Image (cartoon, rainbow, N blue to C red; front, side, top):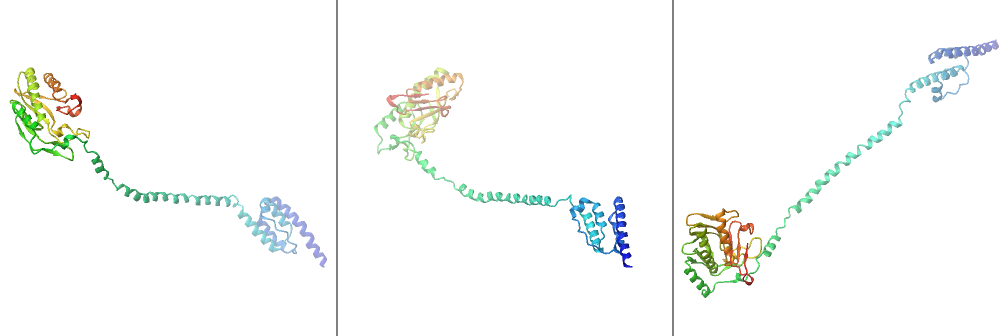
Length: 349
């Protein structure tokens, strides 16, 4: 009795399973159908388990691996494991298109990007610390060298700067005043002028009010006696005759622009002749008919003729003659002085 049973179990199972698997292979049996066949196989004795296929081979083979697995009868436990593995393989199929390692690499790049902005604010704070260092030297002016320069700007020495009045007026000064009275010049004595720091000095000054009997001068004109006498003689010998010849009337007055002034020459360290009362600046002439002749760069034709005659005649009695055209400082007046020059020369412009 045992032998026919074993033959029935062994013989019918193999052909049936082959036919069924061949038919199912053609129909592309799904894993669910294999689950239905497992109860028939449970009745068969357990055989040696077939080695499980690797996941890579299962993906490549597809449904063909399922056929191979069902050909050999396996224990119920092995079948359950195959079903779980097949489910895991189906779930793992959509995962390969998303690789993980390349996604991690850009993350490292993004982490390196926020580093440079952290370095940017550092240099902005540095100028704030450097600003207080610049302020202290800016608040340190140096005015002390100015007094040293002022000492260097002292006037050049002049022998006349040491002149001081004596106890008695010299004979020369007495004789000069007698000549002024003869010319009709009205004058007054004035106290001595002296400034040792600058060098100005007039030991015996006078203030003249007229340059003759009929020619006034104003405002009050302080000069040394020699310059006053030269101006009086020039007025009587040159200016008065030129006014009658050109205008037919007498000269009434002279307006002076400068007499004694304690100052240097403009733009130099040399003392001006005004600092010794040895110069006179004339700004205009007034005639007896009221006509006023102004000294300037472009006077009327008739006035210009009179002024040119006076200017040319002054070069000789006076050692220096300047006027319009000589320089900007003398554009509006005549400058006349008695500065001593070598060989008695003159300087006229």
